[in-house]
Length: 40
Image (cartoon, rainbow, N blue to C red; front, side):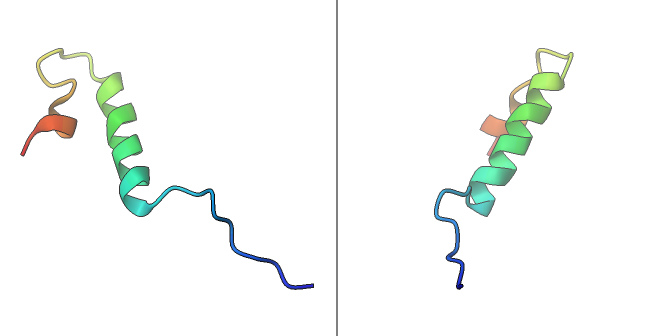
């Protein structure tokens, strides 16, 4: 029996942005809390 690939998984971009968001949420310094998400 052949198994098909999953179609409901995160792309690499979505995966790493989710990690960045969770990391930012752990920051105790309000001035840097969201910098990893919004800096350019």
